[in-house]
Amino acid sequence: MTRRARVAVVFTGGTISMTVDPAAGGAVPTLAGSDLLAAAPGVAEVADVVVIDLGRVPASHFSFADVLRIRAAVDQALADPGIQGVVVVQGTDTLEETAFAWDLCHRDPRPVVVTGAMRGADAPGAD
Image 1 (cartoon, one colour):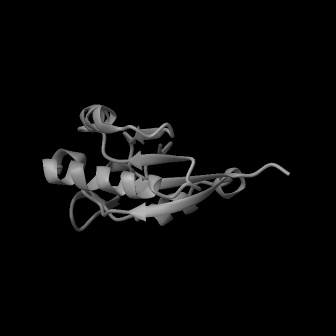
Image 2 (cartoon, helix red, strand yellow):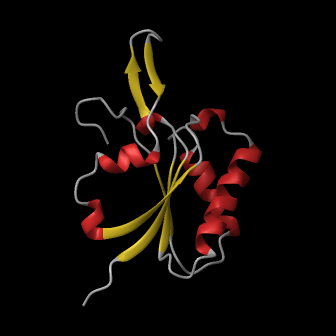
């Protein structure tokens, strides 16, 4: 019997969590990590996902404290020996900077993947 992967997914917000709000006049962060996973059919057949929802902050608003808080959530997830890797879902404005910062202090052999989206959740062809 093949064991499914157990993966932690840290959601921080960004475009991927946004839907259009006519009252606000544009896209606003509205979706939690579990909402986004529910819209991705087949994920449950591939992996057991541990959702870590840290809010809905656009990456352009990240402070150093936010980057360190996300890193602490990654470290906490990796403290579980059953977790085989971590995916951080964030806004794209600072994606490469945060990925680089976390890579500098990542000492665990398990992978940490950082990803984001260029289209909101309700856009045609959403990421």
